[in-house]
Image 1 (cartoon, rainbow, N blue to C red):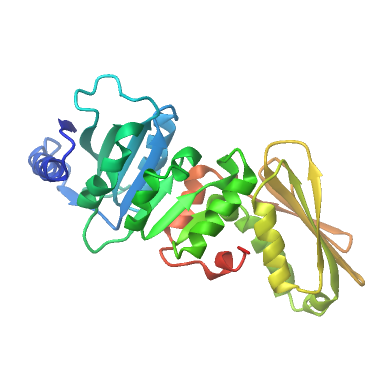
Image 2 (tube, rainbow, N blue to C red; image 1 turned 60 degrees about the vertical axis):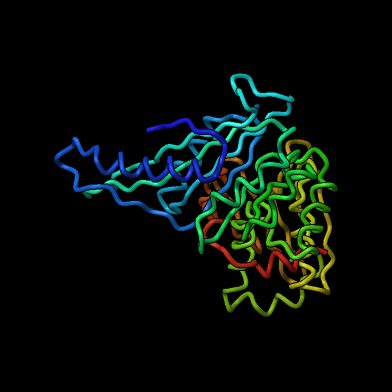
Length: 324
C-alpha cells in the first residue's frame, strides 16, 4: 500500500497512521488473524538516486524480518531538481509485511521513501528528526561515500545512535579511514562494514588459540602477514588489532591485484605456523603446522554485514581500539 504526501513530517506521520488503519481494515484473507505492527528502531538509509534502488529495497526488506523498524530511505539527486517533483521534495509511505511460517498473523513494518535534490539537503535533518520513533535507537546507514563526506548531509549525523559506512566503497582509502577516525574522535558511534567483513577471519584466528594446546605458542609469534588485494582499509584495522593483542610481533603486508579485500592472515614464530586464507569458493582454509582444514565461510553480502551491525547498538570497544 502506498500514498503520496507533501514533505512535512506531521503530514507523513498522518499518512502512516492512516496506513495502519487501512491495513487493519483490509482483512480479506479469513485465514489471517490480523496485523502485528513491529518496530525496534528507526533505520535511516541514505543513497544517491543513481544507486540500485531495487537492491537497496531488497536488502531492507530482508533486514526487517530480524530487525523490524521504521525504515526511512532518503534518495538524493546530484542534480538541482528531480524529475516529476513539483516542490523539489517528495515522500511516500508504505508497509513491508510478511507472515512467518506456520503463523496466521501478518507482521508489518512501515517504510518512508523521500526523494530530494542535493540543493535541499539543508532541509533534511529537521524532516528526519520529525520522523524518528521516540525513545528508540536511530541507526543511519550511509550507503553513498559522497553523501557521507557532504557537509550539508553531515548535519544528519547527530540524530543517529549509530552510523554505518563502508570504507571499501570510497575511491580514496586514506580519505575513508580519516573520515571514520575523525568521526570516532568527535564521539560518534560510527562503524565500518570493512571491519565487519573481517569477522570471519578474526574468529578463525581467535579459535586457533582457544585450543589450550596452541596457547603456549601465542607469546612466540614473531611475524604476522596480512595478504590483500587492492587497498582495503581493513588492513589498517587488522594491523592495529594484532598490535594490540600481540605487541611484540611484526605486522607485514602482502599485496596482490584485484578489488579491495583482505584475503589471508599468516602467523609465524618459533616451532609454530598458522595461516587462514579465503579460497574464493565460500570456504576458508586453515593451515597449521602442516595440517589443513577447510571451513565454510559464507560470502559477506551487504545484508549479512548489516544484519550483524544492527544486532549491536552500543559502541564496539574492539573496533574503537583499532583506530589510531
